[in-house]
Image (tube, rainbow, N blue to C red; front, side, top):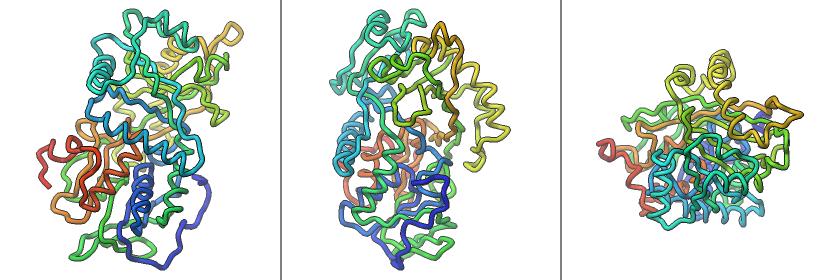
Length: 415
């Protein structure tokens, strides 16, 4: 997939009726198309941009994968299912899509990160090793785990990162192999539910289906008529720095990391070698007030690199650089290179539900349309499991994993 190239739609079939139409082909949409096609259904996936585009939240070279989920233990069963799904996709495509290099969680003992990680570990009997800063520094010399005093350190051996861009290619390839028709560069103006079908109106014609799944990321609100839940779109900046000590930036010396610090909540990925110019990834997960006023978007189209991003960069970059120096100094700095060497900057979008948890449900009052939204910030790793869940819901089947805690009912919205 060439996100910058001018490509024709991936399907020019004259077929106009399908069992299921999927709107939006980010990672969740592609995973859903693949799952439905694997079940033998006729599937049409529609994407307004080119596949692999950089306007949303599914681009970039890497994403964290972890199971000791501090956000809530209810997510862990989905993560078990997702890990099986990623391994299945590797077998299906012959590609390596994950690196289980481990994850260090560093934070105050009473922080959400440490308490939540320990609770998920306890409830689901996961492997998560506590250690002190000295032990962490000995085992992982690329990171300075003792940069902040009185921190707890946990190491989740089975965690690591996903090669995100490889995944997008693999999902599209596998979905197509199983018979899904994927049309990119196709703008959907609107959709309507009729007596016997769902009709989707595009710039190149109408398509109908017995069922529909909406996975439109930041564009979901415009398509989710009648849901009544507002999502928030926040522009996120992701930084990469080139290591002064490349050996210490490799996964063997620098695992993935998540750190809840006085300065904020930061996370990152080692130099994964998949993209030579990437280097070491570091980004801020939380969005405090001083950043929020520059990062809030009223529409997805505002995300691009412009004056607002420049203003946001001026606010965020000193904080990122300070944390990078203290936390990642062993791999990023040396006596010969005392200054940080920037790699590059990326821009993506968080699409957040009111409580930060995913939204997975049926459109209220609809018999044919289900949706998944609000995944940004921590959703990518779940994609194979979410694809299974959405496929099951679309077909009025009981999902393999209970996702009732992610339904609209928690906001008092009835189906």
